[in-house]
Length: 457
Ligand code: PHE
Image 1 (cartoon, rainbow, N blue to C red):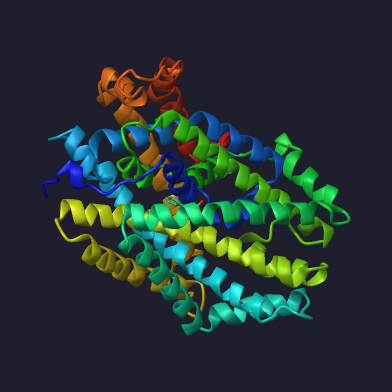
Image 2: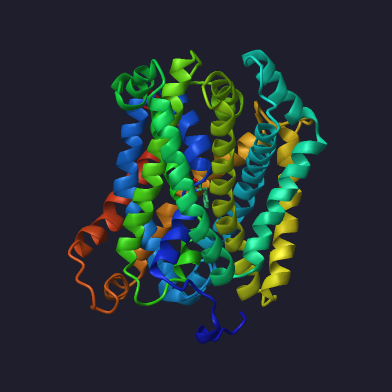
């Protein structure tokens, strides 16, 4: 392992920088593209309720635990466990995390590429005068065209690598501090437009009124996977970012602020999208195409549509970029610290190798649907396996690590900044990560995968 001088380690310069970067990681396509379509497919309000419950009882403690591991160890997602638990197998958490980073970035850059293309479509008024069918064809044609989505995906990967290349303070922190406020502003503008559409009420009812009959084992697993995916937890992205947080930062406050921002943006995205979906008579179960096929139609039909579609796709691009950099950083931090490669080289190498899997992922969504297993293509498999299996499993192991392996005093020391802060809920936190979170994750997991047979659905 490369020896590190802690004084030379790059890191975040300010409290706001920490929140911008970590919230930038959390807020992404997961909130704006994935959350609405998953809510739509899983019955609306009831799903939202289960999701919010998971965010609170599992999300916050897992996030705090990642920060604890990261800051305590001052290492990347894998090195952290080697340092805190030498000679044990705990570092498999890191190995799985790096694997998850490969998977996530592959399909994520596919969709990010679409957002870039749709930004260009918006700019050139390509949606103008098209009805739902024509917009459908437009999406299909673009996806099937082979080369174009790949080019956009590569452009997106290039932007991501560019920021990571620049480093933590002068790259990640600088850009997220600039991009995150813009994102929040844009989403609020969109919400105001959506709720003032005629017939908006029905969409809000769908989103907020729970129908408990719709809750099944699968719905609960989807909610858990969505909570992990949306908060960027369970794969070491926040261990890596945690290692860049300085010793003065209040980790629990940061975890709360990031979770709150992420949840707010997801709910706001729902508020922006569902009223419009219902106002124009679109099926909420439309799936991954919800944003790309139906929203252009909504923009097409509403006053100021050109403007709104432009800012919406700009929003998606920004949100995606501040997340992809955090995923790439997991791999880059590992390669540069553990394999001793210089950071710039590590960035280029990691981006290129992930792109190889990414290319197949994009092709499986387009001209090469034969890249599949059963009825899922490569894209769907990577999305399902990473969000619904690898992240919850990683999160489970992380809370077990902090709750059972790390010494209690060490953990308290870290969340209280060596007793400088009074943390009133530290026992509650410990109780949750020792018992509540692991049991909850394990149950949801087994139930969702059908282990309880008759009881699952
Ligand atoms: N949280 C990001 C989003 O919602 C995705 C992500 C997952 C980023 C895991 C980093 C790690 O889009």
